[in-house]
Image 1: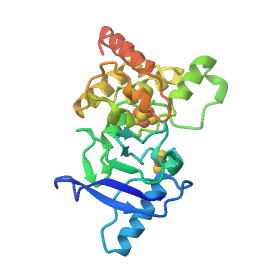
Image 2 (image 1 turned 60 degrees about the vertical axis):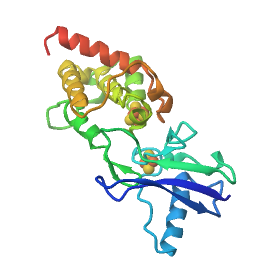
Image 3 (image 1 turned 135 degrees about the horizontal axis):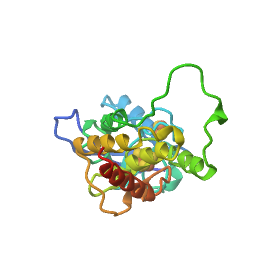
Image 4 (image 1 turned 30 degrees about the vertical axis):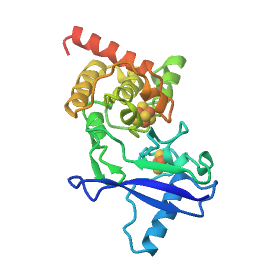
Length: 247
Ligand code: SF4
Ligand code: FES
């Protein structure tokens, strides 16, 4: 396939960015989207141009680093991560526009790379449980109802990619936050810190400049791990209870 790529280039966080256009030939439908970008970078290196900076790590849909807006959609036309998106989703002659996540809380570092450390700070503020050190407790010593364990497992699949934020017109991280709150709040081990956790994680979310949720639902539609919208209801419910309990 031959493609026209319109890619956001920005030298650093304070530099002004612009869209640059590249023609790329020899793209196979079997390539992943990131392999297509690798091919472009090889071409740029042979012509002495600086390669396009983009993030990736696992390339298996696990780490969440491969954040790209592709033709205005977070991770592109399929509900998956960019590394798991294949070029068979495009056709010969297509023009593809590639941008970094657009959210104030995810500032651009360079080209297509954004700083998502705001998510790390939200986790640090309460996305954990405290447990005594020592040997691992016997697995069945804390019974968990099967449906709750399953739900906790399902929402624990959130990889912190930030697509929910990028897709949300408010730049809200409520789906991410709801996934983390629900994951820990469903399990017995998460109960002791449940209400302190939600209070401090929501405070950190707001401090980082993420917007509020207005129930638009773009986040859940863009989420590559299909985190359901109702985790935001759980988040709000826990937050209300925390306020009544004086946390
Ligand atoms: S909720 Fe979904 S879109 Fe948001 S960070 Fe987690 S995996 Fe990514
Ligand atoms: S590179 Fe790890 S999820 Fe895409």
